[in-house]
Amino acid sequence: MGRFTGKRILITGGTSGIGLAGARRIVAEGGEVIVTGFSPDHIDAASRDLPGSLVFRNDAGDPVAAEELAERIKHLGGLDGIWLNAGYAAIGAIDEMDAGFFDRMMNANVRGPILQMAKLSGHLNPGASVLLTGSTAAYERLAFASVYSASKGAVISLARSWAAALGERQIRVNVLVPGPIETNLRNFMPEDVRQQFEATIIGQLPLARIGTADEAAAVGLFLLSDDASFVTGSQYAVDGGMIMH
Image (cartoon, rainbow, N blue to C red):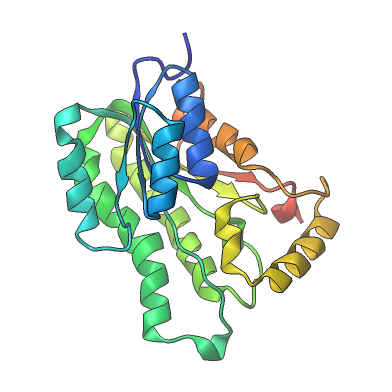
C-alpha cells in the first residue's frame, strides 16, 4: 500500500519538471493523477509517461481556464489533493517593465491559482491537501527578476490565508519553495546568463550543486500526503541551503 493508494491528485503544470516528477511518484505509490500542461509536446510526452492518466491542456494564465478545468474534472468525483504548480517566469530590468510583462507574470502565477482555488475548492474531500509551488526568488535579491519574485511572494501569502480558511474542513495548504532545480523553467534565462547565474549560485550553496526535479517532488509529495497531516500554512524550501543565510 502506497501513501496515495485510493487518492486522486490534480497537478497543474504537471507535464514537465517538478510536477511531472511528482505525478510519476504518485502513480508509483498507488494514486490517480490528473495533469494539466501548456506545451503540446510536453502534454504528448506526459500522456505516454503516465498511461491511463488524464492529461490535457489548460493555460493557467487564461481567465476562463479555471472554469474549464473544474468542468473537466467534476464528473470524476472528489479530489484528495491539488498541486497548483503551473507557472511562468521571465527576467527584465526595472526600466524594461511594462503592463504586458506584469500581466503575463501575474496572470499565470497569481490570478491563475486564485481562480483555480475558487473553482476547485468545492471539489476537495475533507482532509485533502493543497500544495502551491513558490520559489526562493521570493526571498532573494534578484535584480533581474523583481516581478517574478513578487508573484511568488504573493503565492506564499495566498497559501497562509487559504490554510486559515480551509482548516475547518481539515484541508491543509502548504508551499513548496524550490531553489536552483534542474527544470525547464530555468530556460527563461539566456544560456550565458543561466550558466553564469548557476555557477555563482553553486558557489554559495552548502550542498554545492543544483537539485533535481525528483528531489523537489519528494518534498512536495510529503506535504500532499497524510505523512504531513499536522502541517499547514508552512513553506518548505528545497534549495540546497540557499536561503538559510
